Amino acid sequence: MLGMKGAIASAEKLTAMKIHLDPDGLSANQSRYTLDNGQTIRVRGKLPDGRWKNTFAYLVEISDIIQVSSNNCRNEGFKWCVRQRNGGWFSSRGYSDLGTGRGFVIYPFGKNLNRDRCYIYFLNQNRIANPSVVQPSLVGHDFSQCST
Image 1 (cartoon, one colour):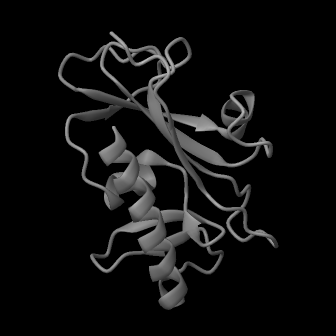
Image 2 (cartoon, helix red, strand yellow):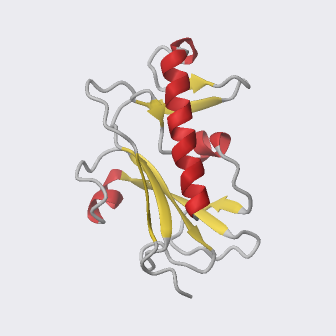
């Protein structure tokens, strides 16, 4: 899980630097960015957006992962689940005091996202694509309940 966290943090930093060095890839409203391979990702504040499906699935390679809409990770064909969360979810756990933005959480098979603190997380704290003040993204983990 720490390897995944590192990959997500690195992808966020590298993509932010790419956007800074090549802003021509930004859409007119600065909500999308076109990568060198032609894939378009979502951005907020010129940072990768906190969406798995529309952003980080294209920036990192993590095998055996599925996006779910449930707090339970029970799909036996996958080792990992990823679930989208809004800023309020992160604020309620003390990770951010802004209560805005968009993020995702990756947690292992057999765990419940709200009951078991066993996950890594990413949050782009910006509410809009081009805020006047850009808030940094958060990449973290909580392994306090990872025992089986």
